[in-house]
Image (cartoon, rainbow, N blue to C red; front, side):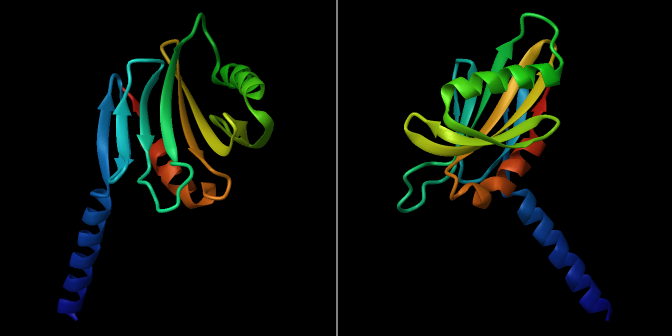
Length: 160
């Protein structure tokens, strides 16, 4: 019985170690985020601090992705006020925008942008009068396949 218990403990520890190694930690400017292995990370010197791209799949017409945008705020904004202002801007950019879900710091919406039908989740953060918007994009058909990955990446996001 003791050998079986030791085997299961070793198996669980090995599984946790492998799971932890499925992500790499990326630090860009004053942010930190966990990125799944196999995803491509691209740093930019623009309001979009970085882009993350999922691995290409055979027959893919759209590469699932993430980007982080930062915006210096002209004054003090509450997270709620900033989110409300942001969704108004999004409504002007997207054709047929459907707001599907609202949380305390995120929106899930779908619509057409640049002639592509997408479904996105945007997470909002404010620190020291700087807004950070973490946006995940997929096609409506593939969004549910990626939503757990998007959530895990978002949960790892930190402003340092």
